[in-house]
Length: 296
Figure (spheres, rainbow, N blue to C red):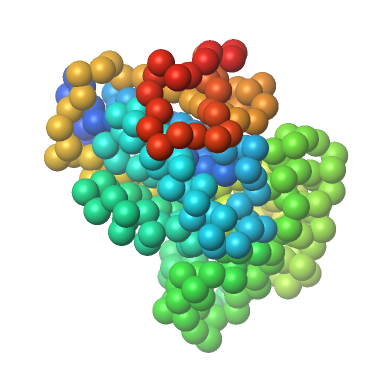
C-alpha cells in the first residue's frame, strides 16, 4: 500500500538480481492498470512485462460478474499465449468478481490481484482523524469480496463509501484531465469532503491517474492510498522462484481501444512504452505473436 505523495516516487531496488527475469502478464479493463504496471517496472526493471488493456469492453465496474469473468478469461488466455508465467489482475472489479474463477481454471498459474487498501487505511488511522473515504466502482463496492474486507477490518470504523459510475468510462473516452472527467470526479469527491475524510482509498486502478484532482477536490491535507506498490511487491515475491525466460527485459502493450491514450498515460506513469499492439476484440482460444499487428 502506498500513500500517494505529490512527488514522483524514486525507483525501488529489486530483489530480482539476475540477467533474465520471469515474464509477467498484466491486464485491466483499460489504461488504469498502467499505474500497477509502473509499480512493477520500478520494482522489477529487468522483468519482461506484458500489458493488455481491454478498453473496448470497459468499464467492468458497471457489468455483471459473468461478463467480467469472461473478459478476464479471454485476457488471461491471451497473456499466457504470449509466454506470461504469472498474471497480475490490475483491476479491482476483476479481482473481486473473477480471480477465484481464474485460479480454479488455471491452478498451475500464479495470480496476483488488487483490492482497495481498506485494511492499511484503517490500521493507520488515528483517533483524531476523520472518516476513511473509499472511491470505487459500483461492482467493487457491491462484491462479496469487498463486503468481507469491510467486515473484517471496518467494524465500528467511520467509512464513507462512494461509487463512481461513469468515471472509468470518462477516463477511457476523454482522458484523465478532460473537463467532463474532472466534473464527474468533483461530484463524487464532494460527499467525502463534506464528511471530513482525512484518508481516501483509491479503489480502482484508474483513480491514481486523478490523484492531484482528487486532492484538490477533497482537500490538500487528505492522504490518498493506492495498493499498487504492495501488489508489485507480492508479484516480485511470487516470481522469484519461477524459471527465468530467455527473452530480454521488455515492456509490451496491447489495446483494443485508442492507442494514443494508452501512450499518453504510459508517459505520465514514466513507462517507456514506444508502441501499442492491437488486441483483437474477439480472441480465439489460442493466439501467438504471428497473429498480432503493430498499430502504432
